[in-house]
Amino acid sequence: MKKIICTLPVVLLLLSARAQQKQGKVIYERTTQMEMHMQGLADDVVQSLPRSHKDKLEVLFGNDQSLRRGVEEDMPEEFTEREGGMQVHMVVAGGNDVTYSNLATGQVVEEREFGTKNYIIMDSIQHLNWKLTGATSTILNYPCQQAVTQRIGKRANTTMENGKLETKEVPDTANIVVWFTPAIPVPAGPEYQGQLPGLILGIDINNGRMVYTATELSDKTDLEAIKAPSKGKKVTMAEFAKERDKIMSGMQRSNGARPMGTIRIAQ
Image (cartoon, rainbow, N blue to C red; front, side, top):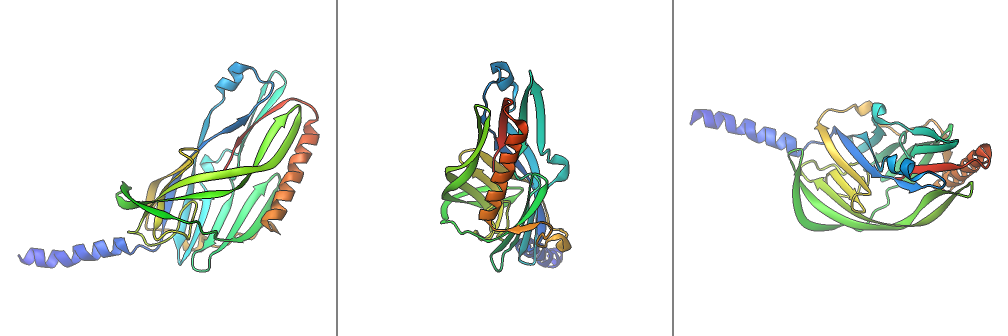
């Protein structure tokens, strides 16, 4: 009996500490289905190209802030294959991007790399209309709840037709399923941070088009690294889109009329 009386408070303290975790680091594996717009490639070449891409990223969180960045050894940004004079480019969109979020104020600062330039984009958390489904699961031994929403917007789509590279905005409706754990009451995650009452450990966008799965979770983190990026040209999202289109047009001019297939791993 004495042993039980002495041990029980320790157990309760350990459970309380886990439930109140406010800082840490999560490693996610991201699986992205590729969007392919090919012209002029032989069927066997098209069939040999990969249909999905896996990479890793990490989210650091603490002090009501979070930072998302890629895990460097798993971030191949571009792959080029030549086939009978044709260039096939594989581009990983956002492979080197960094996203800082102030979870208290709702401020978001992104560092995006495009071409040879870095851009700093300041924005705010865009809240979606989430619905709790009542479904539960366990991820990394943490109890999770399911939340779903739909995001209606636009995305950039790049195609190659008749030797002309063209980027334009197309409608994009995303059905989103998220698993979050209230056991860690920090609204951080690889996406949709600041929107749910717990750490996000899993995301499925459009039935597998993009999937995030937490593979490691630690209560230790580098708090000094959680800060807004500052190296780059400060632009709005609209200004960044114009710069991106300008760079893409320059790429087209440099390639001339040579046939080229583009595989874009979109986000």
